[in-house]
Image 1 (cartoon, rainbow, N blue to C red):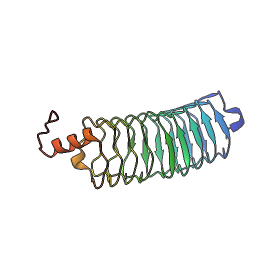
Image 2: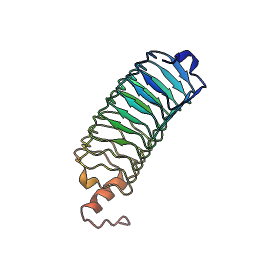
Image 3: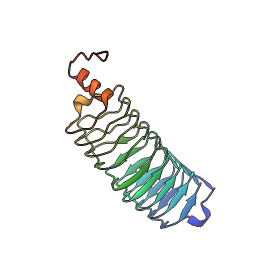
Image 4: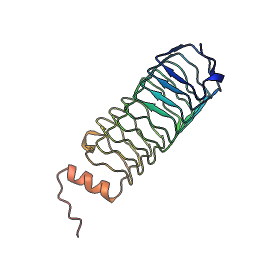
Length: 207
């Protein structure tokens, strides 16, 4: 078991942390590479500029934790709880979430390109401006989720439920919205044109 008070600024590679209690600890800018975290309690913990590269999280809790400019790159989260956590300007590129609790969750910007969050309840989250290019959100619940100005280019939204979601200002290049469930979904003019074209209409924007 590592003493969390000594983690700030340190580097760990290939370590297995099992059952550690890091409740409310400040981990600062520690760096973890190819580490495994099994049932580690990070509730109310905080990081700032930390890096988790290629790490695996089995179980464990991030409840009410706060992460600022922290990178979770190519990580694998399984059955991990993020109840009431805050991700502020975080990088989640290539990370996979399986059977995780991700709401309520506060998200302030960030780069989530290529993230995989399949079949997860993401309803009512505010993901304004988040970079979700090439993300796999298939089969996820996005009812009343705010995706305004998000970058969703080439994202997979197959069977995603977007009832009442806000897509105004979102970039949607390469997204097949026909495969998603749309009802009362908010879109801007560009989104409306895309939907019309996907359904076979020839849109004359010069009129």
